[in-house]
Picture 1 (cartoon, rainbow, N blue to C red):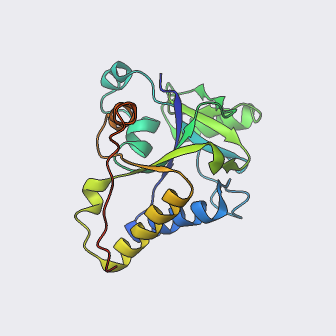
Picture 2: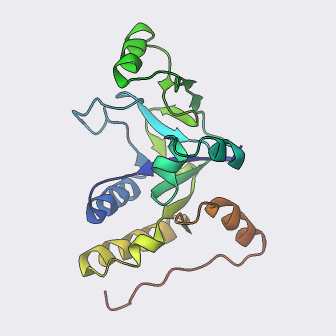
Length: 200
């Protein structure tokens, strides 16, 4: 089991995802949907909790190949914030045996105080999660490298500068073993640096 928690940041457009990452960096914390005044009540975390992933052993993902998991759907090859495992996150009750989303919401109504998820590797954190516990930001560099839009690259440069100022490492999440390789580079003091065109 990983010694980190991950919070994925997804969206339809790359520019919007970068806006969300920048907003989190400026705020210094990941906010709940309730704190963001969101009207979107869909999801396993409700309005007061933040969804997190704690990566299980690799064999668990090989065994679930083709199934939805928090790591494969929201962390690997996506933007994500990586937190120390010292935060007080709660393990969700795994309900991946349920066959429909409606059955999940029926169970959620029956047990409103339980943290329930259809993703076996989901954890949740109550309230805002401060970036003081964040060690890195996962960025899917293989996707970024294909995007030549100057606005997107300028926003990426802002992310890199802010992360550097906060002492947060940038890690290539396009590699399925990115955290293991990151730890190895840290051990040997050879962390890769990402370079953006200085003219942007």
